Image (cartoon, rainbow, N blue to C red; front, side, top):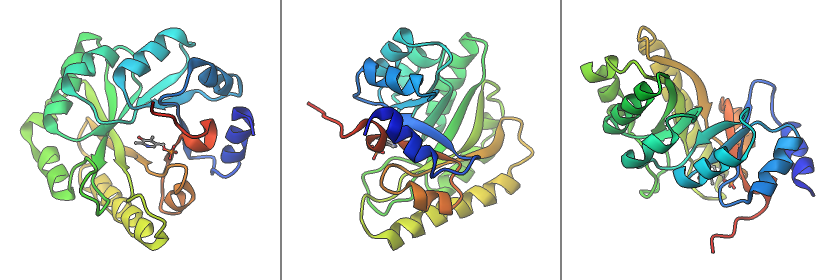
Amino acid sequence: MSIAENLKHIQQQLPECVTLVAVSKTKPITDLQEAYHAGQRVFGENKIQEMTQKWEALPKDIQWHMIGHVQRNKVKYMAEYVSLIHGVDSLRLLKEINKQAKKHQRVISCLLQVHIAEESTKFGFSSAEIEEVLSAEEFTSLEHIKIVGLMGMATFTSDEEKISREFNSLQILFNDLKTKYKQRSNFDLQQLSMGMSADFPLAIAHGSTMVRVGSSIFGKRNYN
Ligand SMILES: *Cc1c(COP(=O)(O)O)cnc(C)c1O
């Protein structure tokens, strides 16, 4: 199937309130153009340099989401245009995003990445660490960032019960934090980013509002 057909097929499975992030990492500009012409406006990349090259080359009404691990020294390259950063996993990184956003006189929306997988290789906060950040006085003073949600990645496994448990734990944390910290001006949980090609229907069943789908749209990635 073509990229346009794949997009249509996936959109048909998404409730209206769920945003589809088309994960285009490693894919050529022509693939993104095809998705764009099919109506897709939200793209996800995991390398800042690659995302910036694509941003420069493509129409300016695209929303660029950084979904990968972010190195602090590279935040400056995307601060001008990035629309959502999914993988925020430290207060130090938030402070750098705040600093760079201020230079461009904007507020950058961020998601806090939560470690939900039982695997040890994935990045992210524990729930205790998130509460530590949200209670820190320093956090309250960050006026150029806004935490708009949480992001999580389930274990890479075919064990659906395990994936369900992991998504469920993130949904519970999301609902807890949403009520507990609702007074903060830079914190307003709206988005729960979870679900990829293999597990997005399960993620939606657990309250996902944003799915990050790559290979089911663009085909397998070639990392060579
Ligand atoms: C690559 C990637 C995806 C998309 O994965 P697919 O299995 O190709 O849909 C989603 N989220 C993150 C964080 C990724 O790095």
